[in-house]
Image (tube, rainbow, N blue to C red):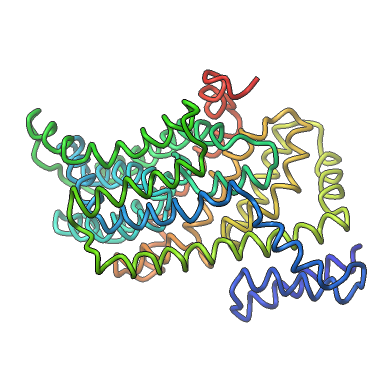
Length: 431
């Protein structure tokens, strides 16, 4: 077992160093390990990859991806920024609050942190610079705030976790992430406000009640998407997959008919981008399922579980160790394969220590969100630097206070289960 797993690990790391795409690296290293050990037919990799994406729940992913792209191109970002500015722009460092709140709103609508960084950052980072904010500060707060959209539903990664964990309710995951997402956003706002006060960033003009109401009316149709999706799922009107399809229809209606920002000629490009993104996600899921199979037949989850439980019988210590391991994983592995590979490994451990699968799902997502903002594979960080036209080296120091905010949020989410569990329990999704 040790030789087989070592071969898998070495081949995987070598491929990453050669800049092989991570989905290909996962699948190829699994094939290499299986062929070298001869413990399973080589065709089993293809079979496990196909079976891994043969899930009705995963049909929601392409629909939510398309819905997010339509929202990004359909003028929703500008309306949300205007609404957030009317609410928060009057305060010291107000544009930092506006940035965070808008990322939270847009991320929850689009379900994509990358879309939030590119859509919101493209508008607000230059605006912040005009108002005297340091550009690196704008990139740092946009990059970290955008990840809150992965905790506030609807979220593709929650669907992936629910499928990977087995008998976990997608609706329960959606509800469990609301309060942790808000807590994370508020802590990022707090840090941003303190930095703005120290650096002397000014405030904007106060908006009248009439102006706030006008901006809200312009943004309300975009915000209604979350109400439709969550209300329909929780009310039993439709499943998460059907909700995703409805989200596409609603987004298309807003983008083309109500706002008129998307034209018929734009649809082929949007559909192509949606297909590309979906294919990448599905390939990651498929290849990660194959690797998970290899790890399972070599009893790696059981060995790691036993090793962790042997360290201590104190849940606080074990949860801290798991968080540290996931933080390390998040620095070099994308969120989707990390969830698929490490959920079967760590979930039995935390369940034995009394942590509910819904709670652990939120802990894992909150943890890996930090990895989206760290090199070498932090996709949100790369997009933020690209949109903000700032070198990564200049963003490293401004990111540290926001990392601390996300770290505090992670500890609260881990050790205060009610933050994640209270809403699912109130809705009767957890017994």
